[in-house]
Amino acid sequence: MPAGAYLHLDGEIEERFQCAPGPGGWRYTSRRPDGVRVDLVTDARWRQIRVELVTPAWWLRGGLTGPEVAWVRAAGETGTEHTERAAGFLYDSPGFLVAIAYSLELDENAQADVRLVRLSGPSLAPLTTIWRWRRAGTEYHETDTEPLPVTRYDITDLATGEIEAVHLAGDVVVAAPGIELTGLESPPNLRP
Figure 1 (tube, helix red, strand yellow):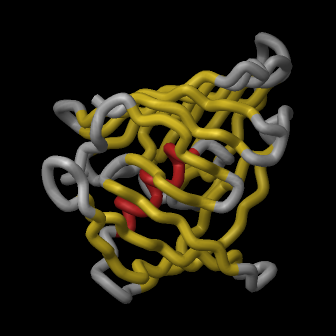
Figure 2: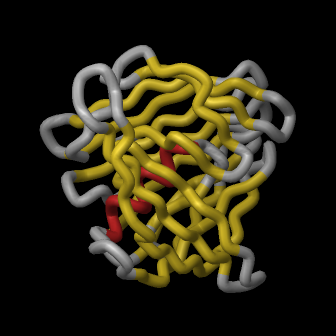
């Protein structure tokens, strides 16, 4: 079970995480010292079936329900229900990048446009956006045991045209904009 730490370069905040495949999918959990907690569960096709995000003042619970995501978001005990036609959520936690990349099942050099509900800030404000994901290639890096495949995804925000690269080794993000992998206590699961 991979466990380790990411550093969010904007704010120098550490995110301690664990992730593991399960009998029906994959789970990613993390905690940050600023009070943010993430619990992301996917099914065997990497669809986000259960998402729980907690900040010091807000919380959100939701998941995919057919062609839509549904969620409840609140600053107290009683929340407001929302639905949106989208493939899943996107948040600044690297676990969401892993789930989205593998849910698309892209071949080398293939691309797909995906509609996502992007959550931002301490209030988990939702904004529906369309992103183009392109699987740009895989490189192999030597390790003590066996070569480590690292796959690059080029991600374009279609609203701005901005392109960013995300590098995945199995179910661990090794590089992404604003994210640095600072520690890994066990190897990633290479066949997610």
